[in-house]
Length: 323
Image 1 (cartoon, one colour):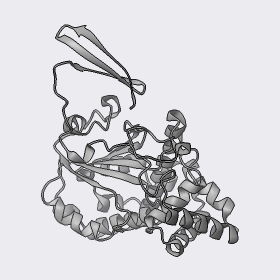
Image 2 (spheres, rainbow, N blue to C red):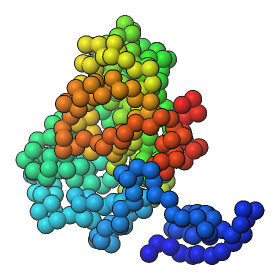
Image 3 (cartoon, helix red, strand yellow):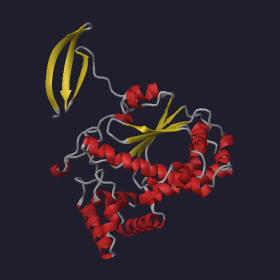
Image 4 (cartoon, helix red, strand yellow):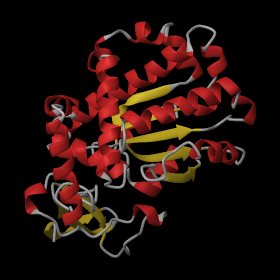
């Protein structure tokens, strides 16, 4: 239904079929059969029949799925209305609006994230949201990104870059901010020689808030609603000796932090070069995570080239060249 124009053309390799979909033009040999993605996870779902007033999602996102604005059941809508009314009764309407990552989401979008994270159980979602709002006020989270990274981290950011290299300037084709991290080089014990556990955790919050700003910028640039990010983890060189007591304590705390204060933000985790020994560590980490809101973890790819070939998630120009 979204195809605007089909025409025949010519190229040095023979006839070419040009299909214009939305604003993008794709050219393929006219005689070539359609190729499905190598991983069934990435097969494009049929567009859901939804409220036309919420047509502001990226066409590649498959949204809105059930539980998102524009695709709510009667019970889900009732839960949203109840949570909104409860926040108003507590005098928290302004705080909720301030916490929303506009224009990537509005107030209802934020409320729905917390409801999805708690299976649309209003009392549990309200408890989670109240705790988050109180934490944000206590730690002045809204002002955190205005502070220099060195001040938040408590040491030279070059050390963090050395012991946990990462790239945060790219986005996937849906406009979701992507973070690329080399967890195979993670050395928490070395970092803690120059900073504290608490500052390391707060630096993670600083990074997450930076991602939320990029989420809002991308939503504005693309003119779509966005609520999630993507994480690509390069696990090359990882070995069990890196899973020290201090490292696991750090990972456990930031996992809890993300679930409590950034629910439903991680849309997908993709792993690269993951050794089989990492699976045992993942079993431990996954035990810390809420099964309701856990992001899908894509089976490991060998390298970025395989990701680009198999998933069609990232434009080549936005991938870190060093990977």
